[in-house]
Length: 277
Image 1 (cartoon, rainbow, N blue to C red):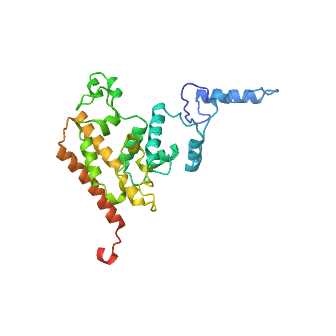
Image 2: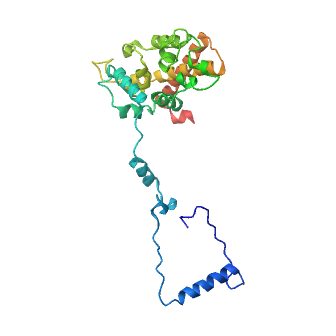
Image 3: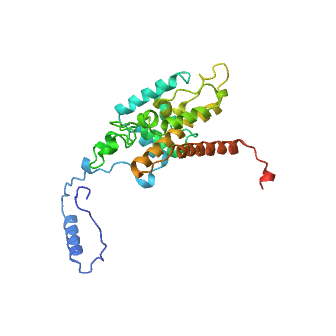
């Protein structure tokens, strides 16, 4: 039955009720039982038809996770390896040393980073964002491959986030630098690797004579929010045709940062239960 290419279905019929198939099967069974020598029947199961895997009613989350971990992971793409090297080089001057690749991938999902921003950073590390050469392969959308503001030939993520002279990126980064508290040390030089590895920032080099303060690193991880906002404004301009003014872009950034700081204050505040109720 496993070797059959067509589906097999069973239908119960009442025995000894003038059903032709049932009567013939009964006659063949009686004929076989009356044979003096038993037939040598091959009952081995062909290799290709043997059931594989595990029964669903026996599958547990632990066994499924063990099976997934045992599978060979796909090879790392060349572009992802280049971006990881750039991230390590950018973080080496801020941390004690360059972080491992495993730490960079794991810290992209840092609790301080919102879920939409995590998705953005993961796609950026995998070079799967729809920019530049992606649009060159789609008919009638080739114009999206170049920057719509400064007419850069082939747009890249680094150009969008840091290099475009006529977009809002420079204005937003300048505002972020001016808002950085001076007591936390000097504002670090922002590279593409700094943005992609913001979950692994520790700011040890900014305060070499004091103990590392996790609050400083938490605030600097808002680099991811700034980069994500620039990306969102870029997508709205390219896809939806929405052009934001410089004032609107700064207001977007200010509201986003203030929202995060307000949440941090609420989380860090010890509330009096009697007053709250």
